[in-house]
Image (cartoon, rainbow, N blue to C red; front, side, top):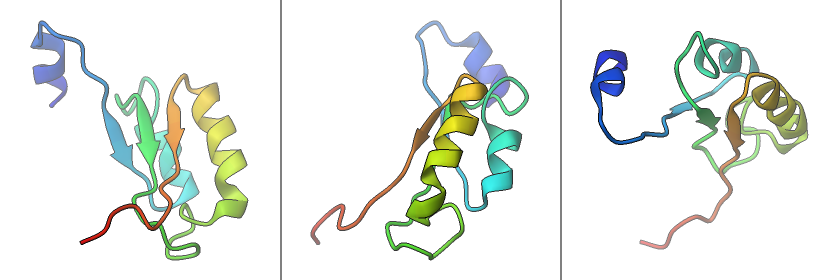
Length: 79
């Protein structure tokens, strides 16, 4: 995907899934290549990253790396 992104003629914005707070450093910013991270799970406590009490820290860490943090909340859709 990194080669495809470099070869692309149109801009892209890549967001990777983070389940644990420590994963943000792996994905966001230069080393990981993602422009942001998201939590996916809307249930508080389902994963450590999906726990609202940790979102402020994740947002700060993402901003420090020049990335965006996107917390997912539920309900997000209706089947």
